[in-house]
Amino acid sequence: MPIYEFRCDGCGKRFEKLCPVGETGADLKCPECGKQAPARVMSAFKACGTGSGKGAGSGCGSCSSNNCGSCGH
Image 1 (tube, one colour):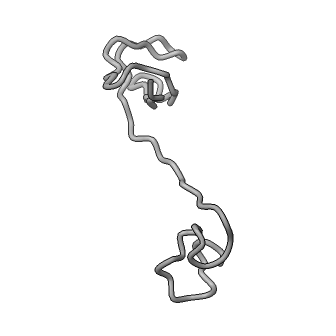
Image 2 (cartoon, rainbow, N blue to C red):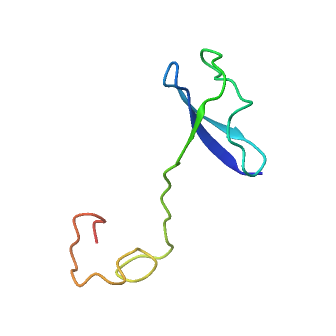
Image 3 (cartoon, rainbow, N blue to C red):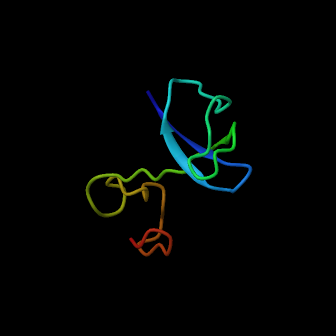
C-alpha cells in the first residue's frame, strides 16, 4: 500500500496516510479538525544517488561544470 499525502480544505493541515492504491480521500477525515474529504496532493521527493563526484550517481552526469551551485559539486 502506498503512502498518500492529503491537505484539508478546512484548516489547511497536510498529513500522510497509508491507503489502498487509488485512494481519493473521499472517505477520510482530517485528523486536526475532522472535516470530511481532504484533497490528495502531489508529494515531493528527492532521489539521492550513491558515490561521490561528477557523474557517480550525484545527478551531475550531464553537467559540464566542476562547481555547481545547485548541488555543490
